[in-house]
Image (cartoon, rainbow, N blue to C red):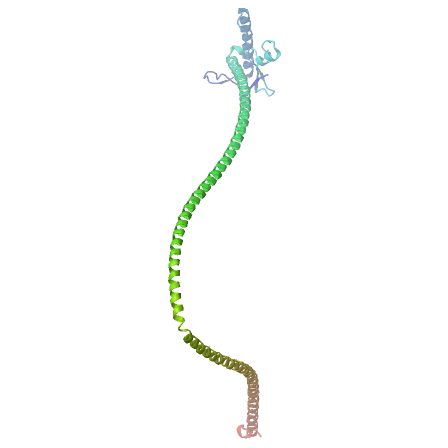
Length: 342
């Protein structure tokens, strides 16, 4: 049951104010009478419409007062008729309200309420349709997302395989390029080796020819030398004997020199050990001298300290003696210095 609650000013009741009119204050009794008259007129109009065969029109909503007597409670009988599925007459509390301005206002409110209900139903249906469409769209989006994810997974797998194939192709291309470079370098080395082999063969042939010529030249020279030294054998033997004697003499002198060197070395070792002993003794003497010197310096310091102490003590005793002597002199000469002293 739909209700419309009108709450005017609690201190007074107002009437009019419809279609741009200025509201006027109405007493409570005249307002109830007007409602009764409007209700009666509305019932008469409904009966006339039924007799003429016109479509059924629902009466305006029922307006009742609240417990405090100031608020107005409006109840639409249209919703009551829809709920009970039976048409009922106007409530006796309205009276003749349908005949005046209040009835028109109530009719307008009821029609607006029905229009709002229809709009609400339409919006509810639209909302349901939108929910269904959103659900269908969500299902479609889920399917699209699943399809996209599956395709994306396939694309990633394909991309991975493709990148692997590309790496394999790159590695194979690099291997082919390396093998091609190796083959090219091998061909170049073979060509260079053949050229060097031909050059070495040519050089060897030239060297063999030069060696053969040199052998012939050396052979001729050897023959000349042999023929020459056949007559010079005795001279060579005498020179060799002389050289042998000189060499023996030099060896003997060298042996004697070695003996002298050994003696000098032994003497140097002895001198070195003696020098080391002397240096050690010198260091020991220097150490003992430093110790003796330090002891003498310490003794001199003690002597000086004792001398200064004795000198100070003697100076103190001398000062005390002087003071005592002065006092004695003053005591002896007191009769002369002080008048009246005896």
